[in-house]
Length: 143
Image (cartoon, rainbow, N blue to C red):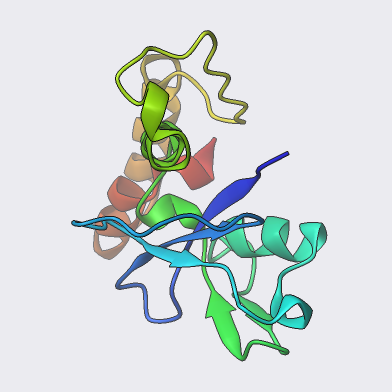
């Protein structure tokens, strides 16, 4: 089974795809593809989970000691990574790249933005003015 998660590099400037498979490169990459040549540097499942969910301020960045790489939450660039998965499937199976998939399953923990908008507004109003930008930029953390 091919598995990939999204993450963000240590300085927050690049989206990363961490995968357990190899694939050919792409002409205009929108993210870095991470799969080390040395199997001992690959992330374990729990490490990949920590790398993709290292959402500050809730969790500290994940540091993978063997690879000397720091990872931040994948949502910085790919809050809903379905587009990443769609691009990856086209790169992995170019012979069916133009076909629609039979099923596309996205498992997430998010909430409907319309349903939580009043809660976000309530939180925003209860915070000091200098905090507004933080609340507006990170509504996912309030869910």
